[in-house]
Length: 110
Ligand SMILES: [Zn+2]
Image (cartoon, rainbow, N blue to C red; front, side, top):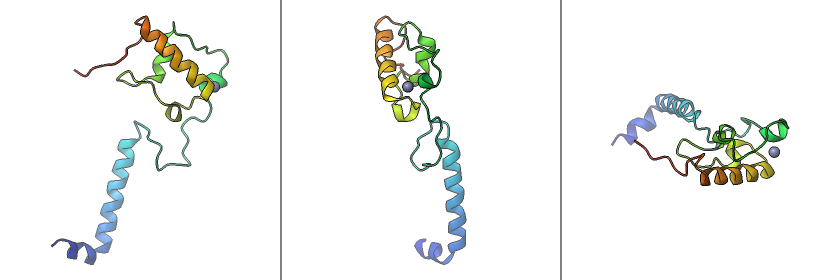
């Protein structure tokens, strides 16, 4: 029967709700799930388009590791900000790098 209390105490409920939302936002900042924040673009241009000097090479895991998660999965384009062309190159490069054991297929937890 707590529903009656909530409906009476509107101000208290509102404040609690906002506090909870703030905490959720702060927690979600790390993993960057762009669901609610539409006007908040993290990185608009593809980093390979922006910098012509950076090449996508399957023999260069230092560059490729920016595009995989901690568990070894390839980060989707909407998160990484790559354009279609370069995301395709990145994914092919990562797959090749996996084949020659420069990158992990998967990272199992401890
Ligand atoms: Zn690009």
